Image 1 (cartoon, helix red, strand yellow):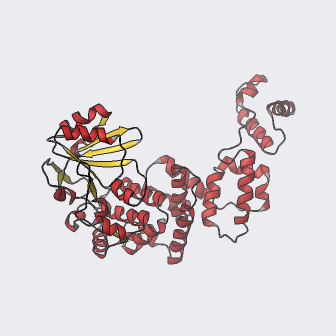
Image 2: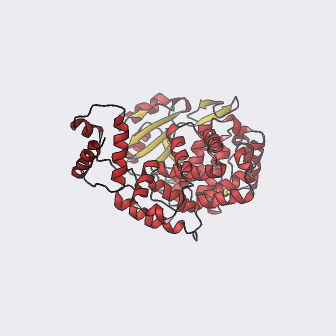
Image 3: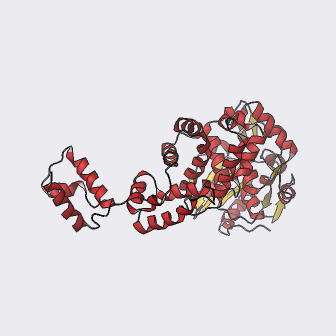
Length: 421
């Protein structure tokens, strides 16, 4: 018996009244068997003659997203659930790359044949809602129990090169071992340079899942090396075994730290991956191979730019903490060094007091808010000029050195400062 959100029963009853049957399949079933909560549910619908008919049935339950229409996918969002309704189909590989498929919808396709297009046996486990029965034609439950990742169909598996990256991230996320036949398939696909057919952003999406959803990202990156994927990620081939192993240990250490948003965690993870490729130019080349997203590139490079700041007792002075906060978000700076510094290092012992004091000063996640702004200068009779920038910088520096700690104190400081120039 599979437990699923009961709100779906209304949809299943409506499908049944239209002589259609629903089968929950894929990730939701896999995660349920692993006791992992999920809000993403894939539902395959049999007995519907067309996508438009499916859309008409679902429309009363919420806004239907038609973005996947060409693939027979109908998205529906209810509360916090992300529902994908699909029609059984056959995928014909007609060209290279992840888009080289001709999709043929067939409402009368039998379950086994429809499911044979899926990537791994653990993603081909299903639950027939009406019959209240598990469907597992390819032995996915047994593979899940034995921690084995196995391809459903070797012939169709090799038609989509992205499945190599999915194998890496599934192995890492669920701590699985690649079946020898799957290992050989992936290895062969890499040697045939099939990863090079993919847009980098597709590869990046799988890497993100590997990094953000694994307890030990090193599992995926060890596989990356063992499968020969340095043919694609050639920057890693330039690292010594010692440097690569050290990088993996940093990834695993950071994976245990959870006090960051996913967006911030990704920046630190990418900085850990790019760290061995420092200096900046080499790191930039590596990062650009992964993504063109400007906010990600800038965030990671900022971490790398200030990674070599020396830790001394001087670093714990308030003025220096304020100054550090103007360069980089101290929270990210600390997490990066918590992941990379040896635990016995003197610098590591300074991280905790630096974190505590940064929080006390209110600059753990942002720079110090300035008391003196341009409008304050104008209120004192000054007209905007080239001198504004210097005056504001001097005022901010004075504030960081605790020469004033209030708006009133700032105004007195400013009056004295202006009287001297």
